Image (tube, rainbow over the protein chains, first blue to last red):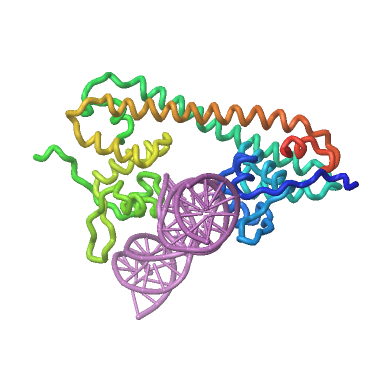
Length: 137
Length: 137
DNA sequence: CCTTGACCCTGTAGTTGCTACAGGGTCCAT
DNA sequence: ATGGACCCTGTAGCAACTACAGGGTCAAGG
């Protein structure tokens, strides 16, 4: 017996439901070479197998963590080379974490600024609105 | 005497330097109707006056606070109607603050997730990388 | 057998907010 | 008059999708 389980085939709609990825997005991933092309049935429908399901699930999880597409591409390439050290993968994760931390810091600064601004409203007319004043030179 | 100060004219490059806005961006703002068109000199150069400087400064500050362009457009429209109440302006600021807070919350969740992931690296081979495992189904 | 509705196909254009050319014209100081 | 800095229009590109338009396919019900 093969050690592989029987592989189920899916149309693009079924794959989308399984992975939570929009159909248009799946086709987009194929177009940019992120997800390998699928076999086609007699009516030219894409037919996906379990490897596609695994790969697209990987992509979705990585995207949900905010990794850019090009990084996901590199991660997939790495995951296809089992004897390379794990360090590069780890580095990508750490870099993404720093990126997220930078964004958080930027937004915290914005939040403080907006908070300051919002508290200046005295409910009068635009002509003497502190918010608009603050944005004017 | 007019109560207006003498208005200085600027080319697009000078306006860019004054406000810290890229020249291409200034032309873009004109194209989308955010900044009014400028007068032209005999060589068809745009010539800006102080009202443009004020308006573009307003735009830049609002954009720096993360307000979407369409919101900036509404704010500018409001600031042109001095006898309307300030409440709508305040509402836009508050909504933007909530938006920023939502984004921060999303990113905090990501950061925690990434942190968890990064700490799983044991420095081995890709074939037994916990990070890649975690992203696979 | 035929129809109907859900599904699928390709290809292209739109989104947001710029940024980057290409291929020209203008201004001014030397 | 010439060189370099500046300006013009128009278009295309970026990220990462999303939304059509205008078709073809499939399976179930009548």
